[in-house]
Length: 180
View 1 (cartoon, one colour):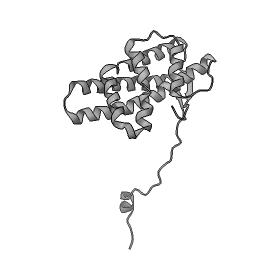
View 2 (cartoon, rainbow, N blue to C red):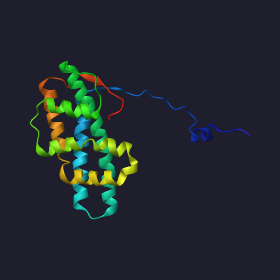
View 3 (cartoon, one colour):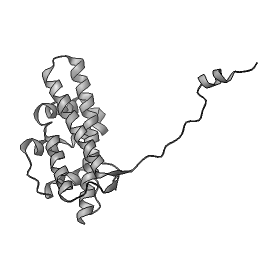
């Protein structure tokens, strides 16, 4: 039995091209990604507040959970980069180190920004502690209702710092590792 070329093409037997992961990114791109995350956190939090549909609320919670994780990772990488540029980086890469480091830049923080940053540690709890998932989801809802707008304030401060110090065209690599 012979196979025609057309039948073989339908099976899509061509080998897939493997790509290497990219671990270097331009600061401007990282800030754009951070802004998109912040906008999504705020938008989905607002939808959550305005609806009574449980499925829509659950979808919003799922999206905000993912976007908080993304936001946290880019926040951490940017803070480590900023410290390295300043020459004050001491080798820490935990989320707690980066949150403390953020405070040392003496940004004029809004109240919701301070609360949002303090609650950012929820990212670690949601990601690593599924045993207490219900408790963490209640905290997530609280964040969505009370301080999600703080994400944009964090973005504005970091973006302003990077613009002021002419860092937008520089590149940095992923800090990797755990964020505890």
